[in-house]
Amino acid sequence: MAFGKKVRVGLDIGYHSVKTVVVEVSANRYRLLHHGIRPLWDGSTQYDPDGPKRSQIGPVVVDLFRSFKLSPRKQKDLRSLVDSPQIAAKEISAIPLQEKEMASAMLLEARKHIPLDGSETQVDYQILGDHLEESDQVRVLIVASSKKAFESHLGLLREVDIRPTIVDVESLAVSNAYLAFNDLPEEGLVVLLDVGCRKTSITLLGRKDMFFTRDVSVGGAVFTEDLMEKYGLKFLEAEKVKAEQGLEPDLERVDAGEGGLRLASKNVLDRFGDEVNRTLRYYVKETGQSQFNKFVLVGGGAAMKDLQAYLEKKFRADVEAFDPFAQMEMVEGNGDGHPAQYTAAVGLAIREH
Image (cartoon, rainbow, N blue to C red):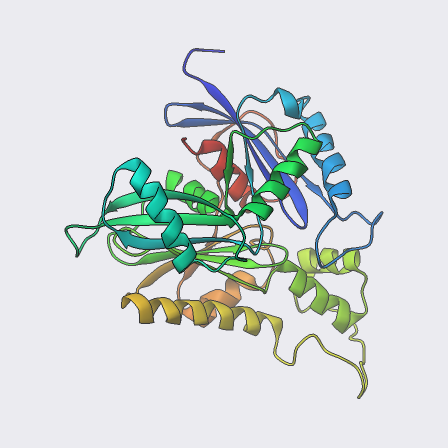
């Protein structure tokens, strides 16, 4: 391998599937060596809304690496995502301090600003730059996780002989992938909608504006469950209908009867839109910034039929599905899935230490 080239692996273990990319990095050039996705629910196990068991995840990870003819334990620079309700990221303002003092101060700030479970806390931070209005302060991004969630993730990786060099959170990995290939507008914000299985992460990025991220509990599984209930489908049947026909398929509805239960009286798309709108209104109230230039869809739900058109109509804004491979050299042919599903894994692989 030529001097200066580095091979990095991004591993995204989600609730629905495992995504992996292997990228060769040289200066600011990225060469995609491998990419692949494996579902965690294939019909051999019943879908569980609480997520897959460890016993399901390990063999899927190993199988994915085997398809690349790679061994997980031999990867020198493998990065992974930790995902848990006990993880949060927030931008704050702080007085600049020496590194040791700053680390101690950020631990106190994390406990003040980020609700966790009261247990021991893992904290990391990044200085984003000078504060635009307070000359004696800097903008700081804090990321915090309960130690229990962090250690649980590392334990899962050890079971498949993986020792990650970096453990990141999804909102930052997704943001990193987008910012690597796109400039932010001079004014206003980009709204990243990471539509995952159990939740959607809404992240707001602006050149001059406060970084903000919030998770809402409407994700791809909610859309699938709605189809299962409305049309009497099994999980994998509903997944296929969602991918091929969208959320209003040409199927006969199931009559729930007077005593039947519905997932919600409101259309699921409307529930999704309401949560996005609530997030944007909160941001406007907190910052005064109300210019949302573009919506960008990433994650497994990005290619879901009906979603893009719905968002364009509701918010009267440009909406696009992000392709993290568009500006990368592709060594292999087309992998499984659609490009937006790999956004977090790409963000991991191309992140600098």
